[in-house]
Length: 331
Image (cartoon, rainbow, N blue to C red; front, side, top):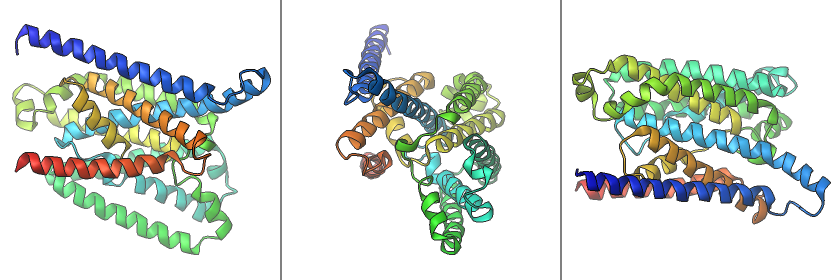
């Protein structure tokens, strides 16, 4: 690639960044100020106090899911998979159902948001890290086997969860149901500080490996030939992916397909191989999707349809498009 082409690509990427940042700011301003009764200061302050924690949680989820999906796709060298397709959401729903089934909705383990967040984060982190690192090592990083095992694990956890729900009291199930679907209308602001600290620590932990990820994306043999300690880097990156998904899921609940959408759109519009740029683009796209979706849910559907519904429907259609596009491209 000539210097002139590199300059054109950099200028194009800067333009894309600017458009995305402006779109994020417009979405944020629209979400915070639309129907916020600016002429009534006390009411405006009350509404702003409700919307700001929700906005922060959406930003946390967008950054965590976007980064985790991009890193995971580069690890497995496949752009149509996400950690959610490997059973992470099933682990979360099984864990919450098990807590309610065993100790009930009156237990501090369920009622205390900070304690519940920590339990979600630690349990999901340990289980997913042990399971998926073992699978990666055992299958020789074969994504087809990993996806198959992930599907089996999802069915396994889902079957146990269904059995517990059938035995559970109806009142407890109604209470549990609100935590099993991503819904920004009942965000608890008490966990925001913990989530931000966790995300910052994960970022610091992964910074040394993100530069190597540009090489790892070329494949195992090429990365080893270029001097990368492949197994050590993969282990650290996979641990970071699991923790990012755990933070996002414990903060807002499971959101299927969001990572698939933002990661692939970022690769399509950001003409670069550098993962720091791709992660930044995916995070911005995630913010636009979540904040924009929340505006639609709040002001058009009046909270009757959660954001996760829009993301799941759109993500499912986009997933089919990617499958057909890849098939057509490879034929």
